[in-house]
Image (cartoon, rainbow, N blue to C red):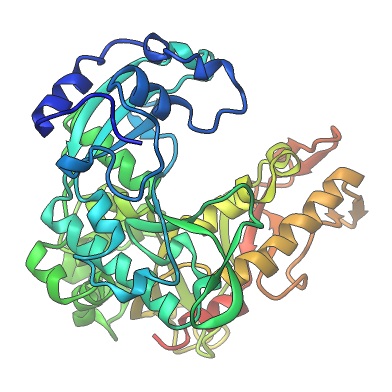
Length: 460
């Protein structure tokens, strides 16, 4: 079905879009779509019909087909710092495992449909009815040259997995900005893949929520984000290769030696590692999470210190557990899934060549870096097992057992499955939170086992 209204230029479409700024979504709901809870199209369809006078469609080509322009309507939220953040990723077209790998990037279905996007942001607020959400900003999105080189690498990463018969192991954490998100009625929506008999989840290309947050802040608040790499570098090298190049001159040097070169005083406070890494990267004094590549790709960094045998000195801790959320959320909306499915980690690895028993004043040397995201098979097996087992324990009631000077519990410990576990991480034994059943427990985090991390970084 074609459009009811014909547009002669992209500028004409943009003028119509901008005319809606400051109005509410409900003002364009000419077919009362927002009255139906079961309407999946929602606000996007409302604006297609009511604002642009277009018939709703699911065509493969761009929405404004004669102009090569695709319409995307997406939600933003205001956080506690009064910054805008994307409420969710921006879902694009479905990945066709059987066909997409046959094309070059420039000829791909992704690029043909999404190279020119008209993005309309509306403000999501929990306390408002959908009809009252205000339309904030309309903007033409063209990938800037630096982002585009990373997008190309991401697209190729997804295609390489399909070609390798690994479509079932694709994860959103595999890539930087362009992700392959699950898309379907539920997690059981699956498709055939061409180079393996293992069915794969149906997925769509999407721009990560972290990428969309940065985009929203740039076009609405005019926030500029400093970048590590330029377009010429990214045309010939991956982000990981460029990171490794920046760190390479310091391999084998002691921490104090690197700190002296960077003119940073050695310290035991938490900020020291971040300051040292930003200095090595050539952006001294800049917080890593504010850099374009870290910010848009949702990259977090972790420092790892290895014993002489290659095993980390300790297990790797993550965020504090919200037990009420754990018991309430489904798996794919859980705290655990979100952290590892959507996040990349820069592991900065140091190693000791003596044990502490041999030299209590030992000093680690720098070994190298890697970008890591949890493999999909681990997410869907060991990680999901931790979530499911913990959920069951919470539903039945955690057993708190007095032991000598402390209290133990029956939450999954370090011997649970070799990958992940739960253990305390409070200031002391009195730093407690409430469990869903009202009992008090020392604040807990989820952790990755040090033996598992050792395998991840063994080839650095």
